[in-house]
Structure formats: structure tokens, C-alpha cells
Length: 271
Image (cartoon, rainbow, N blue to C red):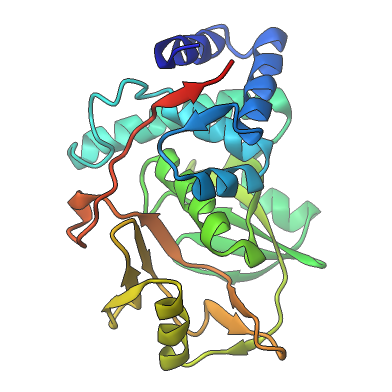
């Protein structure tokens, strides 16, 4: 199967409104992705593994978001803000239509989670956090990303580089204001806050250098990483470092951080 054939098949599934045959085909594609029979050239092998660690729902949502621009005619960030919003809503609507058919869609998601699954315990710039016993549930918005595919990238990259605190996608929804949300589950971690110098040493060992201490930004030519402050990075009693949350992205040239990565939705299919 060629790249063109793959995306034609995905768009046919979308056009057919996710009938039972289409849903089964998506699950089959997700399994091929997880088994590396389908290779998503957007990611390195390590990053594709990170995508699979987010679960089959995460893999399928990433594929569906990619179907909005299968030929890569336009990079994700070169359009104006209004055009970006339009593209983002198209991706979000496609994921919503699929998630409703799969029974993993939540209307008024934050109220539903708080009422049925866990107590609201924290809130940040893009996410709300709920206590779900041994794990945390988080509803992640698109405030920092606009496009769902970029928010889904963030989960793939987090899982690839910080597997100790992997994020698993378990659903999607919209809040009371109609904003699209991704629902993830993450293990609850207890630990001690690390100093900026300790975090810098840890990141240096991973090959990152400090680019801007004011927003705790670290980079490599491949990856842009920010918000690496003491609330997001913990150390256990035995010295294991846990990155709980961060803003992690492909370091593309348009970020002006010395990045070399290029966005693509090209796939290589061994099927």
C-alpha cells in the first residue's frame, strides 16, 4: 500500500461516517502501526513507540488528525491564526465524530469527569487534573497548540522521552464552553522537587542544553522542551527522576530554536 492509498482509505472511512466496517479498519491500522508494519515518518522509531504507548485511541486520533493534510501541502504553523483555527476545528470534528461512535466521547467533559471519575485537584494553563486513586486524569486543551495533531504529538513525545510517566489517551470531549479536550490517564507520582541546577544536570545527560532559563526551555536540534521547572520534575527517594508535565514539541525551524525537524504525515506501509 502506498502513502496515497493509505490516506485515501482513511478519508473514505471518514466520508462513510465511521460505519462498523470503517471502525474495524481503523483498529486494524492501529494494530499495524503498533507492530511497526505501518511507519509514520513524522516520528523517529522511539517517538512512534511513544505514540503507541498512548494506546490505540491515541494512535487512531493521531492518524485521523493527519488525514486533514495527507499530502503535506502546507506546514502546520505557516498559516495565519484564523486559518490555523479552521484547520484545528476540522481535525477536532473528525476526532469527535469517531470518538462518539467508539463511546469514548464526553459532553461537558470536566463536569462529567468530576462527577463520575475523580475529584478536581489542580489546574494549569492547558489542563485540569483529577484524582482517580492510583492514577491522575487530565483534560488537556488546545490552548498552546491550536491543532489537535500538535497536542497529540506532545503526548507521543512525552511518552518517548519520559516513559516513566507515560500518558494514556482514554477519551475526548468538549468543555462547557465548547472547547475540544483530550482525556489522558497518568500514574500518580510521589517525590521531591528538584532544583533548577539538578534539572539542568539531568537534561544535560539526556543531550539537551538550556536555551532560556526564564521559561525553563531546553532544546536539541530535534526536540523543543519547556516548563521544566520544579513543579513538573520530581525525584523519588531512590533518585529516579520523573517528568510529570512539560511542553514538548518537534523542534521545527519555524520555532527559531535551531531546530531541524520537518512536519510530515507520510507513512510507509508494509501491508
